[in-house]
Image 1 (cartoon, rainbow, N blue to C red):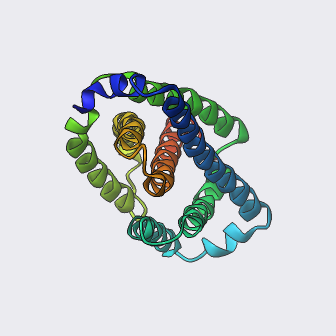
Image 2: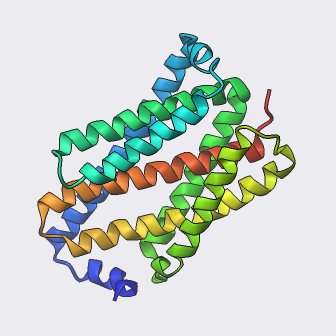
Length: 235
């Protein structure tokens, strides 16, 4: 049973446990590199004034969202069909696209607000990963509820691009943060489950590591944005 996954990890041989630790470090290393690429891209887009030119077009935010969804969809489709390097490139390309959104955050919020939100996100995200990694609760049982709520939240965020929903800002952010609290713990637990299931299949583990890295990257990004919207004061 999945809720006994802690026991299964502990029951592995010492060499397998060492391999699992390497797998986890590799996954989080890829995620961290994606975040670094996003941060660097955001700074470059902001300092070169590129962000001012592209966002003059009213429909660009929607185009950017569609492009990001397309890359993630393509990532999922090509995950087990393309080479590892190709899938990595898609992940890092998505990180660059996200940098456009983060460039806007540099215009809307102060550096102090962004720094505070980042450190709060690191602490919160780390706690959720630890919970997902150590708990015996099976988060997959509530996954359908969480992802249904996520789809509804995405629709609300798209509507918010073109309408004034400032009165619901705090509610949307609170719901979003609550959803990604559960999703992050679920994704951390899923990373361990995937390793246990395919521990002897290097082909699968290489790709599942990238898959988990993208999942956790998206979790971190969304938690950061919701925390920033809650604690930050827009210029």
